[in-house]
Length: 481
Image (cartoon, rainbow, N blue to C red; front, side, top):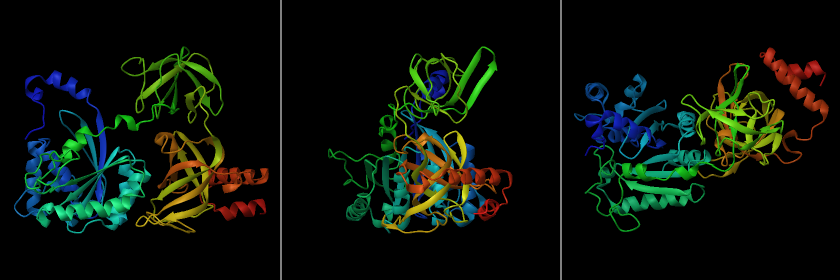
């Protein structure tokens, strides 16, 4: 069955207009190695008629040398494009694919299943609204199933679709499916995701992927009707309410000053709704004004929503620069140089408390350090363990301190302003990603330290910026500490 619009052939302009107004769902596929993530995406694209003839011809040829499906076309090769991926039959890097149906547009991130590439999975999940977590029906819930579920939940993904794949290899057993559902629900009791759904399927043979399968008549929804296929769930899941439309957040990325008569503040609206005439406040200065215009390349807007890139002009001349926030006039946003955060460590060199890093928070760059690790999270049991350092792929609750105070948002309230990345000051490599959980309590993480300690931290940041080869002990020796 084709899910492509007939307007493509009959009226291309009407099709493009219709396509422009569809909403967009970003989702990821994740799970253990060989659970069928790439095959699922290939099947979605193939059965919804979203593969071009030259692409199909290319993977048909590649299937003869790199395929794993015998004489049949290996649809996983659509997303496993790296030579090393095809040689090993695994996904290494995050692969993005776009497709659309009559109801919605989609961007898929196919993420790797190996524990070694957990950081790549976190990268793909950071912009997703939904996660499809695959489980091999033969093996059930595995370590990576729990790990990826926890990371998806940690990153604030509210919709989880648990795809029990390879049902053809367990003779489409209803008992086996129910057993896996029960095991996963027992684990998911510790997750915060409010929407979890289960689909039995065979990505290789197409059962319950785009079209409903006749080989699993026992698969029913809550009303007793035949259960929806994967694509039906993706087309109908409600994501519009996931965005924060209440708390206005516009981190300023650039101040546009093309001439004497125009000063605009550019950025992507992270949360809230913005309209001309609305009273706003600049942080950290606290100065207030009113929105005069909302400017875009296509003309002025009467209203702006989260995710839109806009330029805002204000009625008053106030000092706003890159890194500042524009918020609602009456907003109470905590200000602190210390906060607690969940950090996913993404580098072979371990995170060491006390080492200075560059912190990129929203549109602001500043220096900071992890003062302490409260606990490391065991992603299998979600238990907390003490840790003195974080190794590659580890996740922990940490106390972070910056060289200056900044507005602090909880990640689950506003992901765009409540997240940050950690960058090594010597190599300029991104080594970690963090989600803020709140300001640090008084006395924690160095809050309330003496003026001398504050001076030492700021001097350390300046020296490391201009002399990156210096170590922390060099600064202490310089200060006689």
